[in-house]
Length: 160
Image (cartoon, rainbow, N blue to C red):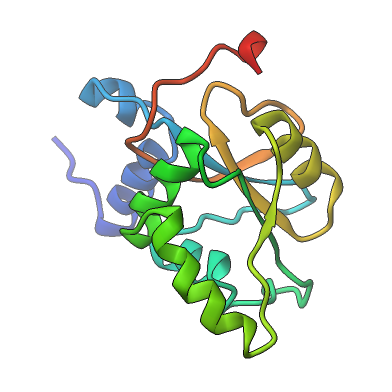
């Protein structure tokens, strides 16, 4: 029996983590996906540290030089609350003090969009935009660049 070489093993595990079987194999589905607009040659995969930097606006530009446009759901939205806990370890209200301090340095918080459908439309049509939605709502208009396990049950698309 042949052994997998470390780079090949790492590639297989990465493919599984990106959604080609790992969640269902473990019996858990990721409930929040981080999305961007599809672009030619785009193979971006982001980790929690990347997301924290992007959504705290300490990372302002993509590798290609384009400005990052992060977007949030409203503070009382269940997906926003879960995203904030998973990425920052804080509630949206706890992030308010961070944004008050940043305001005095000329930095504004990410855009806030009223629904997950609005998030998908904004991300799909805005250069450099990034946001998050329930995994069941992501469609062909966007690509998934990160998956976060946890959060609320996925709402049926017609409930949007």
